[in-house]
Image (cartoon, rainbow, N blue to C red; front, side, top):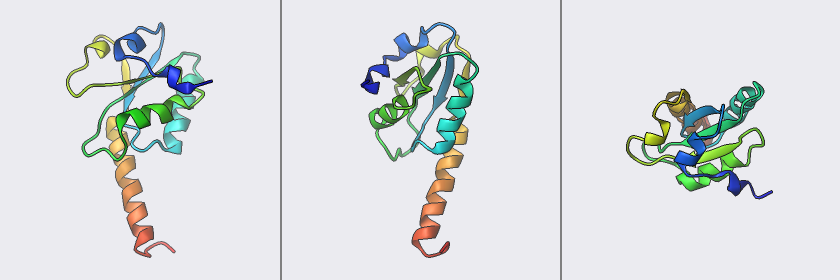
Length: 120
């Protein structure tokens, strides 16, 4: 299956019935993201992920969308625009953006530490 078919316009993704909606950066996609999305999917609802852009993204939104779409537990993925997203209006969403920024900062510190010989 070409998982890119899971990537939908935000308005279409927002209309998936009974979906568990998650907004995040997924920049980069980490194992902790995959575990969290699998936990959400285990509740029996389709998981719809909305990709937002963090400050100074490491990866393009389209690349992040393809990576997230590759997860078997994810039913659909949509890339959000820069401004307010009308597609999300009225939806209950799990907003992972703050946690994603913390995870990304940790990863960058870890890579820099290992690169400088601080963790060998």
